[in-house]
Length: 475
Picture (cartoon, rainbow, N blue to C red):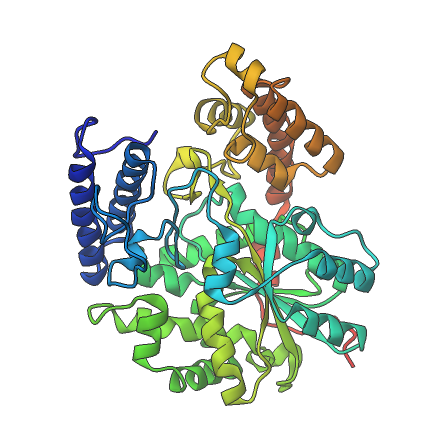
């Protein structure tokens, strides 16, 4: 169970209730006061920890206007309603108090997207003539906006292009960062379409304690890791915002068009900005929106404005593109379509996504075979029982076991994954054996990535990042 800082382990339910209310106030004041992300994250983590302790003590979730001993009110629409919800998802913070992770079905309803169902997966298979990627088969990419529209266009020989991105906050990337790129590479291969990858070094300069040179340096280093995923240089343009904004009149014109059509009130509502946020942060969403429109890349698409964009990304980025889709028709462009992925959980459990700032929460792309083994064995949250006897008798819980979650991302063989699930759930497989399987999957995967990364020279990175024509057979 999570530790509860600043509270006694034997705190009464009422004391816990009051602590949660106080901590909720602190979180709100930190957000309003433009505190650092680490400070806010730490406060949110403690809030979730207190809520988990309350649930353990009371057998029910904390409700802001229902102190222990009072009957629950019929509705909860007060100002604290959001605090009573367990999941918190925005482009900077992902938190839940559930060991199973975020409730994605609820998130689909909240964000107003559509579930990727069997029918859509079958349609993708028919359109491409390829077996669906394991991320589709296993619900890792689980939600979409207008994917059927993209498939209609593709089947009618109309063009589309792919757009995804990366916020380069440090030199080293972790395996969670690879998820959108692994899938985007598959999409590029099966649909044979051009791809643009935005490196938001400007965003990281605005949000983090970095110099412009550091942010740009991280963008180039991260680009090398992305290139090592195997993208086709003839169909892929990777760009740094700091670089490209000054080179492309089309890109900057679209940024300004978007900025004109979004009010300060709208971005405050979407992103939670406050009056004390820098104007750089407030205007940044327009920069992330601009690659959604084809004439932002005149060297690739000339001045065409009718080419639809498909964006594979983690669902925490969706607020940017809800804004973009709202603006698009007002400036005469097609709305971008989206494919949303789940979050890659931290080693310590699915309550939060991996963090590049915590070396033990992640398997980094620079880790040695020995480091991978140590991290998995020492830090991977287990769904096993307290003793071997109990585990053999009652079995393990794959829904909360991080090693099993990681295997759903990286083990290609569906039958083998299902066998592992059965063996672990029945108690035939122990936690140590499950971790061993994961280690044997991750070690070669990371070693192969490192070998490909070594081949990516500064010259290759520069070529990928130079504005140029791309090859495609659009009509």
